[in-house]
Amino acid sequence: MRRNIITLALACAASGAAAAEVAPGNVAFEVGAVTQSLTGQPGDPVRGREVVGTKSLGNCVACHVNTEMSDVPFQGEIGPPLDGVGDRWSEAELRGIVTNAKMMFPGSMMPSFYKVDGFIRPGNAYTGDAADDSFGPLLTAQQIEDVVAYLLTLKE
Amino acid sequence: MKRTAAITALLGAITAGAAWAEPAEDKLTINGEIEMTTWTEPSAVVEGALPEVISGWHFRGTETRAMQSDDFDNPGMIFVEDAMAAWDEVEGEAGKSCASCHGDVEDSMKGVRAVYPKWNETAGEVRTLEMQVNACRTENMQAEPLKYTGTDMTSMVALISSVSRGLPVNVATDGPVAETWEQGKKLYYTRTGQLELSCANCHEDNYGRMIRADHLSQGQINGFPVYRLKNTKLNSVHARFKGCVRDTRAETYKPGSPEFVALELYVASRGNGLSVEGPSVRN
Image 1 (cartoon, each protein chain N blue to C red):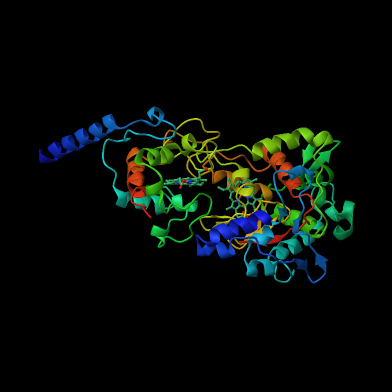
Image 2 (cartoon, rainbow over the protein chains, first blue to last red; image 1 turned 180 degrees about the vertical axis):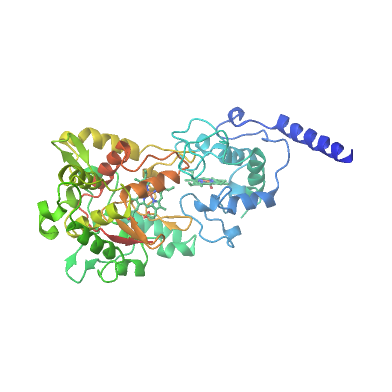
């Protein structure tokens, strides 16, 4: 009986989150920026930090140096350093850049982390096979919010 | 070099890693006698796209570079020796070996690697070296074809490459191959997969920079097949292409496919002027 109540509560929470979540195709950009939160929930900078530094998640350090994260080895040099991005960009701009950087920087090499269509030969992760039904954006809506919350802490 | 120096100056201020992120200034001489061109002026193919044409050798560490300068230290040469034995081995219904038709490999195959992939008039197709080896096997020897990226094939390609070391890559891009070359060029600049990255994003726009733990080279293929310390075997061109395309989170093309043949022709021509270096050593 008690187990059923918990299950019900979880189901409500899950569908509640889904209802408020902006789908990848429905994100509204204004000059590369996204004002509205993708989830309606505040981002968690601690989880965002993990996404930025972890290879199987955002792997942002593959391309960006981030001094605050000097504990993470092998930081790449493709994009500008993330140091001070919280000063240079607003929350809405950072949300836009992380969601789909090509809206802010046309032709950017930076991958679009919250997008599901328009790809040429999309694969099934790193298998080399074609994408299947499990295909989704590189990061979830909440992970995007977490990353934005973390980036806002990077002040100089 | 101008560009690289500017980047290094910029990055020097940012990260300690930048100190070893530029291509090493070094000179490659094999066995103390074959002088190699590993850094040269762009040919007409890459004019405007690359200010300089640099072998992947310059982007590897001091020890890896040293291994390639002496055949006794180059693990790729063990595979070349195996292929020398295979060169003389009679196989197939026709009762022939490679040597039956071509004689001494050092004489007959010198200069061959430098111009492949190339047009085959009889077959009316662009052939990679692998395709030619298999055409000889099936048509002239009446033997089974070798697996495109298998060790026997890659070793044979390494042997044929090794006798051209030091000669300049000089792949034709016009005439009957022009259409295939254009197709390869298009593939080179196509941004594939969920990461939407093209060959050019990494190897033209960002060579010399670090992408996570990897030091990006120009992705030249003059050194193929390459012995990689990472997987301790010889690696073929198409196996490398497949790995790079997979890393864009894309559905890859198959080794030996028309797409990879076209891409190989185009990428080979980007290295025109560099010395044939295979088998080379990379990490």
